[in-house]
Image 1 (cartoon, rainbow, N blue to C red):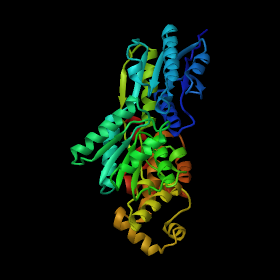
Image 2: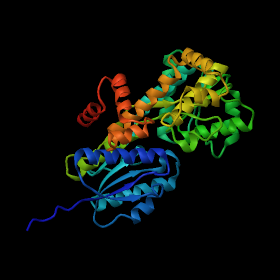
Image 3: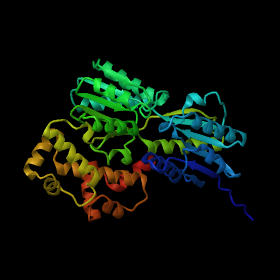
Image 4: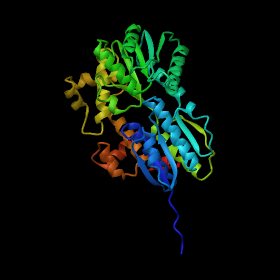
Length: 402
């Protein structure tokens, strides 16, 4: 009688309360679908408490993927918990992939069963500088770090400043103080910056603190300060006033790479390593970096509406009515600043959504049509072919191969 192949138990601990946690999990699941590998997955949602993860490791576990709280909380307690978890995995010969760990705390631990993945700070900081330089003309630029001793935060700031100075922007100020414990120091720093100023914050949490400091003290966003964050998390970005522009790193690609690396560790094809995940970077432009002119503010508001509701029953007439402006003037202003019509922007957003679903979901094309705001599959197929030069089926096959 044939023996059943034992399916390995894998524990996944990610910050599911944040968008990045879900994106990373989607990447993990995409790798499993594409590779045909089967894991018995156990989810640990309390990823910020590595001690709880330690308690929840079953005896039969073969691998662990851990995303840490270091991006949000920089405390000695967290480092001790993570180090304890790492040592336990080593003791039990459990393969481990750590996401966003502070590598300087763990490089002294050598093991053939542990790999660490981090987002490329150089690309992120450089991209942030390019985004803000392309937004408008500013008298100065600033960077706000999340924690004074966070290596990832300081690294993002250093590459941000380097890119600006290489581009001839000499007035660049850095704030690496504790923004949670010393809000007054942050406020005094913000007030001293030459206005108008563009401020890059190391993540959305830091950017949200900057926005609140401005609101409480009469600093206007974006007229006095343009603010850009990182992570594009709706918790911080969509419900703030003004809404927060934010860079969206390729967290899904990070999850995919983590699962691929864990599979290699578990079967002995990898000896453990540090991996920098480059991926693609996009920016969600919202009101915190809007041009200060009335036309610029109008265009940014239209972009927000399209980003949030393009796949619903929306068109130029609906947007014009909501903004209390004529359809003709709306299209004129939008084309002047954005280089395309409102309708074209809606179509492009819908097609991008269709491409994402084709690449990363198993939905039928009819379902994708509905999710992208089209009543019929045939109409989306026509528009997709016009925009992409290939059918949706061809695009899906290309994604599977590449």
